[in-house]
Image (tube, rainbow, N blue to C red):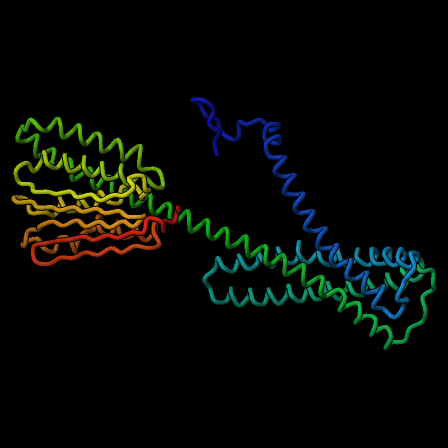
Length: 399
């Protein structure tokens, strides 16, 4: 990460620590406040349910408890909830992170034995969680018997037989299990959401890198073919060579500085095609018969940069050299784009389109990355080659 300042730049490591803390502190405070609020809400809900249960649903108290009973029971529940908090936080901040780490370690291995070992590890962490819950329940019973009843309600611990102890233990166990499972479930859902976001970001970064690679292939491909044409003009000492170089410079400037955005106005892209056609007219001169039809209802509609130009370039590349006929038709209506590029071919090289290694295959992949609703057809019959492209520009991944 770098910070731009005026015309210079400096690395993140050069930023003073005081400035870093000043910038990050409000964000961290806001994040901590939300986290604390979520925890307080969680404990508040369960504490209220427990307090209501013991005051109004338990046979140990009257249906209309006094304020003295209410205060004592609130203090008693707070004491018991200390143990519940220990169980919950140990589970979500110790057991679950170690279990997640063990699963990630297994996913990095392709060996079958590693996955078997991970299943055993999962069972081990489940047993650890179960043990923590059982021990926590025992601690709750000890606190209830020797602290709550003795010091809060000021009643000496009575003698209990085995059946009574077992019944009270099971009661406390079923009181602890819901809150522990709820906390674990919430934590696992949060981890899953975080994982999905990370996976989505990885996929998006991968597609972005692939798209940049595809475009990096297109530019040299275009430059190579165009320079070949200019080279032919220069060899014949054609007076149009300087004009061709100027047109090429204009096109390359657009490619370098205007094609980095997610979308460009379709009017700019069509002007780029017009400039390219003007360049090729200098090369083919009397051997070129070309028509370029445009039916555009909104020239500001966004389209992925350099998506149409390679199709036009492909038509020039594979046309009949001595008698080139190309027809380009682009129609746009309410965001629905239809483009048709037709050219004649040399019968002796009629398979050249089918063996195209960069152009058409490149466009197909870009369409798959950039648009959710499109159709791309290649029709080759006799000496006529046609490419048909229809896109719903409103269905762009950047829309």
